[in-house]
Length: 107
Image 1 (cartoon, rainbow, N blue to C red):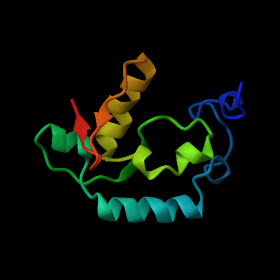
Image 2: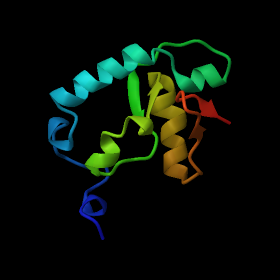
Image 3: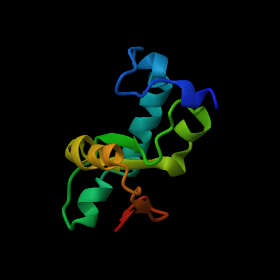
């Protein structure tokens, strides 16, 4: 069992956001990523245009810092997709959506 697998789920983790790795360095990286990838990849796949405001980890990092900072594991999402479709998919255990090299959802 790895150290990351022993960490509580982010849903039940009582540590502060910065203590979980989402401090100043993450905020700067997040803003830069959203500037480079301004549209929600899930909306784009549905033929819609919506600004992204969340940088999602396509594969949940569960505390693994290498996976946390792996830019190829990031996807730009709008709040609606991040807080609904993405969360339902993770909770249900469905196979993760795949993304192309530009970070777009491949259905």
